[in-house]
Image (cartoon, rainbow, N blue to C red; front, top):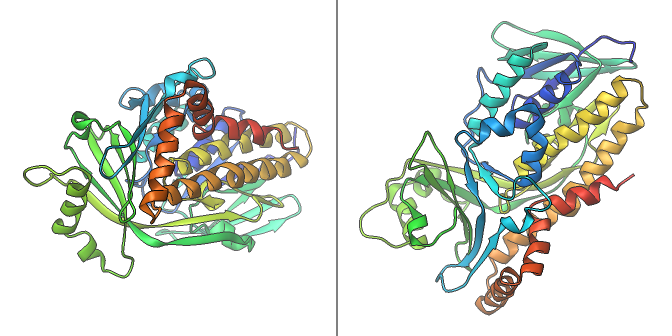
Length: 402
């Protein structure tokens, strides 16, 4: 066992940071969790969980709790704007390789309270809200972390620091690690309505191809039935939010997906930018990066939140082994494996998905969609596609990195 008794300090109480805390406490490793906000954040974007992510969270009791209100999504679709081409994939084709042959839809802001509750039940973790990480100093045997907040500055001594503090990560910036990649030119709007698209043939998870305005549509449970359908679509980044989020503009976007009599009941609407970036390394000495602090991608495919959970489980398994006496090389292996998975799977697939959805040449786009319909209707090809898009194949390949 390591001679130090200093805890592992985790910056960020989002899904990745909370997953790290749970995974470390399950190994009886002391944890200090620091969150800049005064409470858990109410994120309206992420909410689709792939089979291997559900498998990873199951040992901690998270997956069982998620099923209490989550929506099982066995089928997902790629469709074009006229609606005459629909490639529908059935995740039940994976029933022999996973106990969860479906996606589970549950909003991120309903996942984090489950994680926090289980962490408090586990005990042994210091949890500090309203503590924003301002900086840190590295030493030979640890890290001193400085936070700011309403009660003033504080210092925390850590054996290791995990930066799970989001895309604007103070920890990553403090390391000076390059955040390689780019920002997509479009701004995106996400809007939610209780109107039932499912009654019109839409699967609970759809990607809609269109040369002018592609989109992603999926259903989330909300506070209970009938749930909400959430549409994300690109808009002109040079227009003001008050224009992009006006009732007329959001209504028009929903009507383009499914024309209907009468206006849609729009419950939530917001804008956000999409980045495609990966940190040059996920480790620098005794400081480690995970989740959005380490990588960002566009939402087409639902990979971002899932890959953050994958980071946390991989990292904490290796950090636990080091804590019990194995070498620090394990943390370099974490960086190599998860960076490989991010670049080779998450980044590649999310970029490919976006480019197929937004293809400007109608003939080229139609050819791509016809190919996807052919894949979806061939069980062997569909299974191979699902192994890839469900992140199962990418995780297997990453585990082989040495």
